[in-house]
Image 1 (spheres, rainbow, N blue to C red):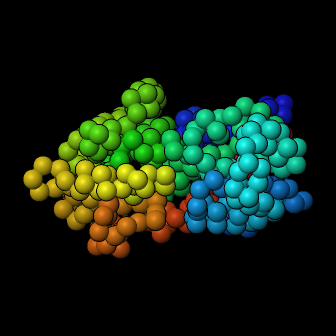
Image 2: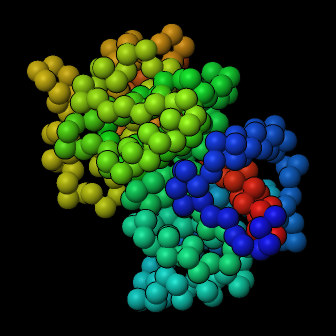
Length: 318
């Protein structure tokens, strides 16, 4: 135990390789015995805050907290004094005296870091513009179920390499000992600092991180192919430009995850998409709905991975 000092999960590398494996093991156990773990019995309350719209995050956290024996307190932040200029730190000091943990889906990473800096309870990043670590925990659980392992596998992500999903795949995949390839246009390369941090982790775990401007090169021999929307929330004004850049590579290709790219992957490769998906843009319907797709398992595993993460963090904050 840490004598009451909270453990937070703000980005994927907040967990060591061993800790990540522990959380994934617990997620598998909770999936196998869905109602057998009740660490929030009482009930204890967990606040789940939203600055952005949500379906999967809102549902999985609310259901998961209830299944752990707790009370989910779901708050749309614009209906609070957050929307009228109250500081993150002041709001956190109020929440932290009344709830067992806080999950927040917000914009800048600096906001959730400010929350964690004063919070007496665990803070979980439920999505920021920089990272989506809860999603990648669920993705790793899904890949491990499909392939029986993580270390040594190659995961290729196609699309916006500067996105929160690409950044979390780099850090989370490297922590798991995977080879992570980002296939993205030069304009949307990953943040160099995150690439460097992931490379340092990979050097210790036996993984690797790579950037490819050529989307097909990223896919060759991959065990996992992943993608995400090309224009995320808050990027609506860039949508036309992003679609134009990501829809073309050379004379006859794009960064779309389609059947020709899937054919380049290793036998038994699986396909991930964190959803919502735009069929025909970043992924074709044939791939999303095809036999390689594990996206519905992936969506369900948000529930199990987040339950495990929450229980794991609370155990270390008593």
